[in-house]
Length: 219
Image 1 (cartoon, rainbow, N blue to C red):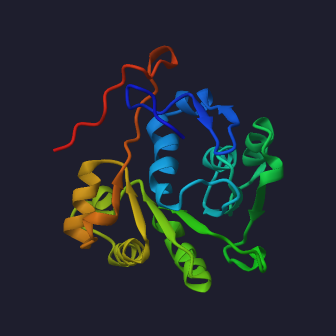
Image 2: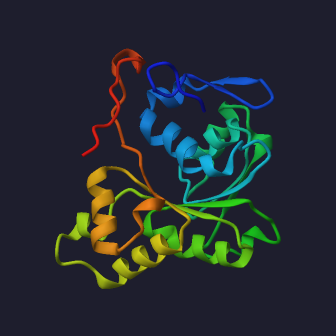
């Protein structure tokens, strides 16, 4: 995705081949949450066209559809009912670029499929992401929506904490939803600040107009 003169994500994504897709739906549905994580967290991989992405725990398929619109070949695996995700990718006409896999908790359903990058949402999917990354040697991106300290205060579940810490350290990139979360990840989990990227979960702008939404204030 590219940014306009204001520094905000454009409503249109222009591919390397010159084609474009209207992403106004994703701009309306929390622009920082979907456009920026994909564009910024995957920027080190360059153009997504033809890239094979494994998304673990993609739920309703919004990010799945977005990555497919950006040119990726996406395999999304989850334990939940995938009917909503199927409707999402069908609505955007990217079903030919998406494989949806319902799992019972393992990774056997993936077979011998190969990937260029693995993306995992929060601690519940970190172990699966690590397993695939270790088996394939491909980069792992983890998305931290909240930490155990956010959810439990000082009375943390040590088991969950260790899963989070291990997953963050194993990842090549860690996406945090705020600078507060970023600070927690650095201080409490000892993660290198150099591989952290902050992407806010922002509310949708009035009338879907994102032209005047300010950039996040950095400390």
